[in-house]
Image (cartoon, rainbow, N blue to C red; front, side):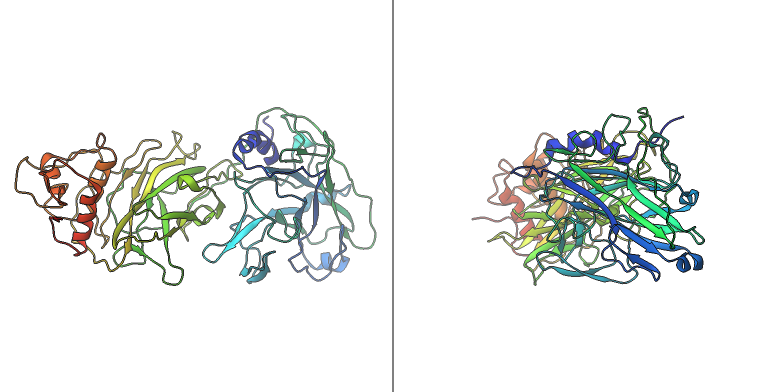
Length: 564
C-alpha cells in the first residue's frame, strides 16, 4: 500500500530549487524561529468559546447545542523576513476517542473567510476592506487589492497519516517565497497568520481536552524533519533544535483529561498516495478574435471594455493598465505553472501585480529586467489549477508611458509562453498556446479599416503563434511563417506589407516581425515595395521608420508615401 507524503515533504524536495533563485536577505540569521497555533486574532469567536492564549475553552452548553467551529491560525515568530520555505504538519491529539470526529478545514488565498468585508491596516498605514484572510507577508495595491506573498499548498488528511501514526484529522502545509523577496504585512511577523483553518467540534463532543499539535519529532520518508523552515539556516526541532513549536489545547466543559502531547515518529517509503478530486470549471470568455480552435490555451490582450479593443492612458494615474486574459479549450485545461515574457512597442516600462485572479489568486514571481512572470500552481491533489469562471485575468500589467512618445498604436503581446500541463489530464509537458496581441493607443487614434483573414494558432511547446487583431475586434491576422502573396514589380500600394489590398495593423505587425527576424518571417518583393513608404527606395531599405509611417497613416496623421 502506498503511503501519504505530506506537503512539508514535497516542500523539502523543492527547497534546493527554490533556494537557487530566491533572494537571500543579508545579515546574520535568527538564532531561533517559532510556529504557534492559536485562535485566529482577527476573527470573532462563537458564544461559549473563550480564548485564553495557549488554551481555548468551550462551554459544555455550547457543544450540547450544536457544532462548534473555532477559527485557528498558525503564526510565525521571526525577526527577519528571510525564509525561502516553511513546512509543517499538525494533527488533533487526545486520548479521548471522540477526537477522531473533530475536523479541520483550511482556507486558501482565493477563498472568502469573513461573511462581510473586514477592514485591515498594514504596517505602512495602508487600509482596505476584504473578506479574505490577510497573511503574515504580502502587499496591497489599489488595482489588485491585497496579495499574499509566496505560494501556499495544503495536504489535508481527514483520517490521519499512517507514516506518522496519526489517526485523527491531520493537515500538512507548505509555503515557498516563490523566488521573490517579501516583507511583513504587519509590524511583526506574527501580527497576521501564515494560514487559517476552522476546527469543528461536532455536537455532543464529550468533555475533555483536545490538542492541536505539531508533529514536532516526525521525520519524513526522505529523512527530513516534517516541521522545517529554511533560509540560509535550517530551523527544526529535531536536528538543529532551533525551532519553537507551540501547540493549542481546546478544553471542552469543566473536567479535563491530560492530552496526548507527542506524536510517534515513523519513517515511510518514498511512494505517495494521491487523493484525486474531481474538479470542473467553465472558462471565462474573451473578445472575438481569430480562429484558435487548434490551441489548448489562448492568451488575449484585447481590451474587452473598449469598443475598439485598445488600451489607453488612465487620466488619473498617467499610466496604461493592460489585462491579459486566459481561456482554456475545455475544462481539462488546468495549468500547474507558467512562465511568460512580454514585449511592447514604444519603450514602455513594465510592472506587474503579483497575483493571478484566473488561477485561484496564486502569487507570482516577477522578473523585471526580462518583463516576465512565473509561478507554480499545483493543487494538493496533484492536478493543476482550473481557470476561474468568474475572473479570467491571468496578468495585470501597468505600463509607464515614456516621455516624448508619438501618438499612434503600439502592440503588446507575449513573446515567450510556457504553460505547464496538468499531466494527469493529458500528455506532453506544456499546453499549446495562441496569443491575441493588444494595442496601446496614445493620443487621438481612430479605428482602422478591417478585413478578416486566416490566423495561425497552433504552437509547439514553449513557442507561441501570435494572432493579430484589429481595433474593432473584427479580426485580422497573417501567418507568422507564411510568405506574403503578390507579384514583383507592380505599382506599390504603400503600407500594404502583406499584399491583401488593404492597409491595416496587420501590415505593421508583419513588417515589425520581419525587421526583427527576417529569417523566420518572409515578405514578398511586392510586399517590400509596398512597405518601403518612408523616403521610398524601391523596397531596398526597410526600417522602423516605414513601420511608424504605416501606423501614422492608419490613424490619418500622414499620407503615404512620406518623403522628407
